[in-house]
Length: 336
Image 1: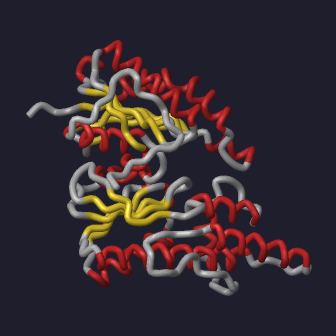
Image 2: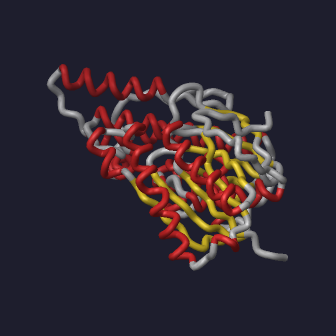
Image 3: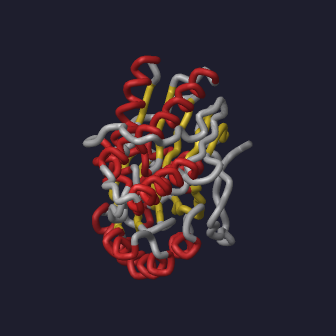
């Protein structure tokens, strides 16, 4: 059987990335240009700046990728692109580039949902085993997804308000931790103790999450302590906050595995790099004999390799688009 080589493009937020992926699990070459140093000055991603940088970078990256991979455009099977969800200005750059390459090179165009990409980042480590449950945790999403087979997604629970990564960033900001704050909150949490009185977020029998109340509790605590002239122990507050977040994520995920009678768990999204979450899930999955998979740290954040991995299985199911493909800031991945 002839190898399927997919040229993948990811530009949903502030990383411009292209990759060539073979057969859904073999990375031939990848280029990622991050804008973190630019947006750090503003305390978060500025959409207008992000889209302008994508315009500057997209053709440069394509040339670098082809040189690095030593793959000719004629040998590419198909072109894949993240069409959503994400920042609409950023997405448009990637989608337009993919459509142009598809048109000029006469290659099929594969639309990939950003969350499908994060899920299939795990396929780059080892072949996904079904049925499985995916815990998707990122700056824009917090969801539990059931998959009976490849490229079949059923959402069984999700956040009712803030995504967990967004919550981390807001807490980091009130603690005056520079952007991106999530990794630093995680680091400080391992140095501190659970000494603050913070609520457990939506600790109920559903598979849903809610982090806005916990975020508000941290913000109010910090402001109240400052007004009283009390010093905040940043490490202890980070430890308490992270313990509350990890506790509810792990508790609901493990219960869903048991109730759905699923033995395979994968974790996806930027927050899958969180050390505290990884440690707790590894411990609980060992206790319950659950097969657990995380992406490599390089595949946790946005990258085109994961888009190429997902695109392979979308292509196998006949999911292709014409040149009318449009970018979507919001879009539903799920079958239900």
